[in-house]
Every structure is written in C-alpha cells, then in structure tokens.
Image 1 (cartoon, rainbow, N blue to C red):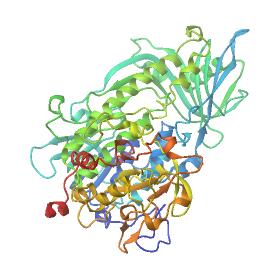
Image 2: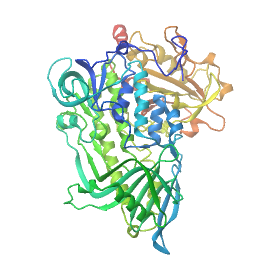
Image 3: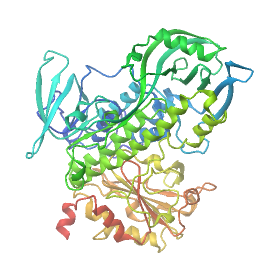
Image 4: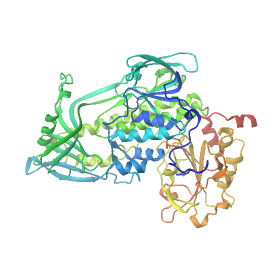
Length: 635
C-alpha cells in the first residue's frame, strides 16, 4: 500500500481524499447524473467502487431496499474474485473472516448396504496451483459491505441511495443526459410517489427479475431442468463426521451438496428434492423447511442431522437462462450504435447455485463495464469502447450456463447412473479452472490484441487474466507478487520485461524506455491528459533478468521512476528483478530477448509485444483512446 505522497496521513490510508464530485457530494438524489446504477448487488456495488476512482464522474446507485443487505443468498467466492478483492484493497480482511475450501470430500452408497453412505474420495480444491489466492465461503452481505466501504472511501464518495425503485426509462435522441428514468420512493415520507432523473448511462444490476432488462426489451432465454433443491443455512447437531468439510453426497435417496460457512458453526445444505413435473406450476417452492430437513436425514443415513437454528432457507428449481445481449442496442446495429443502457449480473444470466458462480461472474460484469464507463466519461476513450461490454460478457455468461448445466446434471444423478464411482470427483478436479474463474479469455478487439507475439510470454495468454508471479522489488528488497501491486484505479499496466543487458547498459529495454518517456508518438506522450501525473493513465513497470544485487536504481531509466503528486515525489515501487530459484522469466515463459505485456484495468492481458514494436504498441492504444490535449498541441 502506498500513501503519504500527498502529505502525511495519520488516519486509515484506505480512506482516500475526496475529490471532484466527492467533495460536498449531495445527500439527496439529484435530477441528473452521469451514471445511474440500479441495484446494490455484487455487480452494482463493485461498479460503484470502481467508479468512485473516477471522481469527476457523477455516479448514483439506487436500491429499493431501505438499507444494506443483511442475509445474502450467495456465499461462494472463487479465487478469481479474491484476486479482484486484492485490487480493491480488501482481500486480506475478507479472507480472515471467511471459511477456506482446500479440499472436497465425496460420499457414495456403501456397497455392503446401499441404504447407507460412506466416504468414497477426497480431492484437493486447487490441485494445479491455479492461483495463489484461496477459495472462500463468506456471506454475500459482507462482500457488499466491503465494496460499499471501497466506494464510500474512494475519491468519489459514492454511497447507495436506498429506498428508490426503478420503474421505467425512455432513451431520447438528444440531450446531454438522454436517458430519462422514472423511480418510485419505497420508504420514507414520500413512499409511493414517483420522480424522474436524467442520466448519460444506466446500468441495471437489479437481479433475475430485472425491470431495467424489461425496459430495453431484453429477455432471459433458456430452459428449466425440472429438478428442485432445498437450500438452508443452519446450525446443527450431527454425527456426520465431515460437517466442516465441503462434501458432495450421493445416496440411494438423493444428493446433498454441503458447504461449511464462515464462523466455525454455520453450514449450507443443498438438499435434492427430486424431479418436478412440468405441470407443477412452481408448487414445489412451497415445500416446508421440515420436509427439507427430513429429506436430508434420509440421504445422510446412517448419520443424523438435528437442526437447532435456521438462519435462511429457500427452495429453487434449476434453470439456465441468458440474454442474447447485455445492452440496449439491436444486434444488427452493434457495430454502428453506442449503447446507453447496460445490464449486469443476474439481470442477464441465471443458473443453479451449486457451482458457486453467480456472484463471481456478476462481479466481473461490473468490473468490465466500470472501467470502460470511467474511461469514456473522463474523455480518455471514445464512446465506441462501450460496445465491447456486451460482446465480451455475453459469451462468458453462455460458457457459464453450459458448464453449470453439466455440473448440476451430474449432481442430480443417481449413484447407479454413473459409469464409475469416481466420475463426479474426476469431473470436479478436471474442470477446476473454470469454476475458479480462470477460463475467461476475451477475443481480439479494440482492447485485446492478437496472438502474433504470444511466444514472447507464453505464461501470460492474451485475453486471459494476468496470472501473477513473484519478483523482488528492488527499492526495499522484498519478494512480492507482481500482480498484487495493481489496484482497481482505472490505469492500464505495462510490464516491460528486460532483455539480458543490465540497468545502465545500452539495450532494447533502454531504447524502449527512452521512447516511452520522450517519443512524440509514445502512448505516454500521446494519451496522458495534460496536467496529469506521467503515470496517471499508464502504470509502467520494469522487470530485469538480473537478481537484486545486479540492479542499481541509479541506472534505471526515468520512466520507471516517475515523479508525481503535489510534491513531485519519486515512486520507487516500479522496478523489479528476478528471484533466485523462482525466476519470473522461467515461471511465465518470458523470452530472454525481452517482452512488453499490456494488462487492462480489469486485470486481463491485452497484448504481448517485442520491445522493438513501438509503433504497434501506440497503434493498439489508439484503437481505444483519445489523443490528449497535450499531444494535439505538439502535433
């Protein structure tokens, strides 16, 4: 964590100084706003936290509830989400209060008495070391609390406007704020009355029954599996020995997915209620909690389960649905019209809860659209950048639906329907990378390059998330994860992996560094807004092949030691070297001739280029960035 660069900080350094719209932010909902977020779920709250880093942008978030969420339905936090929490500054804090999943046990019918179950296997949760971050279980409400704190403590000082319900919208052809939104007061002295607010952009994060989705004519399309599950968060007394370990239980009487919760006592039980007839008309949803508990006891034989307290419970039918597009632009006009209204999270994809994907994928929706709105509304990027949101996230949602269909179908199988007893556990291990959130790979676009030079950095696949690795930070000699330094501050990361020459020697890296700082057509010169710090748009770091003792900061090019802030202080934390016995060049397949790895603000690798490909680097950024006033005056 870096602070003090704007002066001495004696309080919590996570509370950033208010700036822009965050200074004297009005308590009441204004008549106009740049961005109106509808819904304070995972997508909406992450989006608010991201936009709080763009304090010149006016952002308001409305929520129909009178206050914060207290009991959340989602609880599974995949490692990709914890990586995201790291970028927002609260990964360590939330991990400390969460339950960590390190393995999963599997239970099957006892061959000697198929009416009873026995433990049949155990699988490591992350056998291939996909991420250094853990797989967590924690109440969704706490996740929202952390994002709410990030939004409130960011320069934009964003806080939810509780007690407002979205009613409808109209998109006008003209005007600075062309989206006219009608909202209704759901609490307080004006309860029941309506008013309008005008916005430049609206993002609907208002759940599976999204009114925003309906207002732009989108529908959730898909199918229903006609299979019901009861789910309950309960405190229990039981002789089942694995009650504090994640378990998939298959018995002659149905299935259970058991997920221990945070705090050491609470657990979530997904209990198989069996097939549902097409003519049921959702009557299964009225199944009482007593029936769910009885069914759980039947499945658990010879063990018993006594429920002593029910924190929350529900019954749901498995369905898999996704919208064809995540914005208001007709499909035929995608390449010609810039969107004004977006949907994210459950508003555009729904599925079963058992793979722990809903909250995780929803947060990535918010991350994806958040930085793009920030770039556009600060004038750094053209409005056409917003066209990439629907294309990128809709494909990911469809992949999620396809995976969840397979996983939920397997969970509902009877033991005798498996070809071998380890089929379920083998599937869990073989597909671990997908539910962990690391199979996302964006296609080439204006913000994701092609793979012409992928061989220069094989461990950083273009379009996939930047998989961090360890290096030594030269200024303080600390071994650190390179990716952990990146924050959700809207900046692009450019990692310059050096060729073999050391600091101070003539090399491809030194020539590249000189060009980046002073070249008339370098990204820094061309796109960084005039008056901003030199690293306000591009966070440029260098990783040398030399070990710590072979690197002298006095020989490092200036672009990697930029001055910034009101006191124009040097940022020394951009210079790294290879670790003895844990060389990042070997770990991530980096060419010894050097490479440039470009990473988007949402942590996905955007491009890999040779150090000599300076024109290609600038041309890539020119696809999604506006020339700065500084560059316009010098050109």
